[in-house]
Length: 298
Image (cartoon, rainbow, N blue to C red):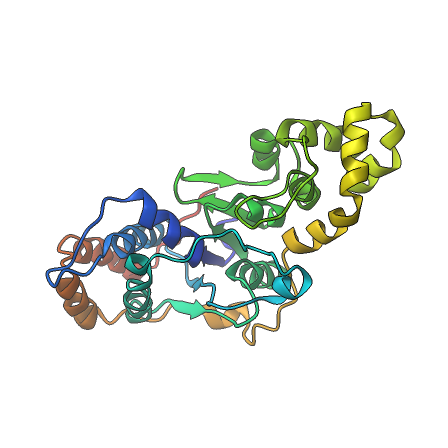
């Protein structure tokens, strides 16, 4: 595995949001909030030092509706508005990533997850070892041989068996699992009264949602009734939770090669934001880069 080129795809929106709520509030000398930027850059710096990927990109969600809203008007309707303290940090983070030589990908009408799913599949087809960096469990559906998920919060790396160990089901059952349990964050209503444990048990017994629906008569009356009541929305749920792997992203994994960092301008940016310790960390990554060491997690 050492010889395969490594492609790292970072779920920017999901991690940025997580960093904002998880980290203590920091401010720049001018008083601007900087905690989420700091957390994000620390995470990427650690990745660069440990994996030293030659190919790397960060995908972000854009504001506005996506193709899922066309299918289901209430999609994400319960999600809170992005706080201003987070919004103000996004342009600065994007500027830092560009100065660092890391590509940013975003597309109107699609979520970062769909962009990542498409590039991950393409990358695998082109012989890359793909590592998706995300704290979002919905992405587990993408795990297969050659595509792995690294949770930047817990630092756990997921292959197919690790997904099974953690969630009790395999990645290829994840779309059905999410369709059954629903997702309150995205306002997707699952099968009422069927939680993760029951969903896991039923999927292990019948293999898929289709398998469960074919054997409804074998289920406990209460559960059978819940599935019958949810029948109309289950197919829609599957559509909403299944990531698209055929988005016309307009670029290939080969185009995601990391460029040389503009260390001078990065230094100025970090001074402006009050990040004294970060330059040293990025410098470490540069040394690894110069020596051309490709580390592997495997």
